[in-house]
Length: 153
Image (tube, rainbow, N blue to C red):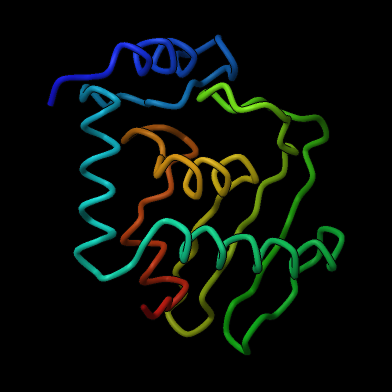
């Protein structure tokens, strides 16, 4: 699909060294517009939406913060650990505001699978439908998120 010229500026912000050392696109060779469309279609195919996923991530993050770096058990099967890395990071889509640098790791005790995200991931998923490019160290795979967290539509 043809990419809106405004997304070219965002795509530049996502390159390594612009906002973050590793960038946001990983080794994904697709244009940003195609990454957004592909992930959006994957989520919609499961009768979900970005807000449902971001809301669940935010809820688990809030509960995990209560552990001050120690694991918290949520819903009897999700172990949540929030580690503060100190500092903040900007949104590459040029939203105002800064997002805390913290890493959230959730392990499904029933399956042993884990998934990780950041506060910025939650924002980018909710506001932009962006899960980061394939190969990015902070990519959140939408289908893994739904499966591991056992999110129901």
